[in-house]
Amino acid sequence: MSRHHRGFTLLEVLVALAVLAIALGSIIQSVASNTNNAAYLREKTMAHWVAMNKVAEIQVQQKWPDPGTDTGTEEMANHDWYWQVKVVDSGVDNIRRLEVEVRSEEDQEQPVSSLVALIGKPLT
Image (cartoon, rainbow, N blue to C red; front, top):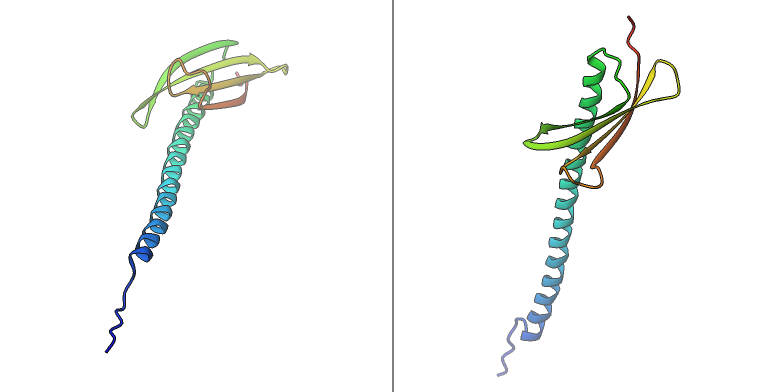
């Protein structure tokens, strides 16, 4: 009487584990990439909100901003953001151009977000 055992051979198990290891490596890399993208987008969104808030603050003041540069910090989402507002003449009477840059670190070379806005001179 011959007995046939059913089951996997050692080679089949090793091949299956190798395929599984490659698949898990790809999945882990994909999840890490998505996590990095989410953090990047969160930072860009917060910095853009800081820039929009600076423009809104200038508009609400109802004061005609003088050309020049102003800098400061703003806290948003438990993080200090470093902003710079540059006011320049637009070449059109009664309109000024605001160039807002926001950085996540004070000495950061490239801004996380940049925004350009035009504001009109308030009516008196």
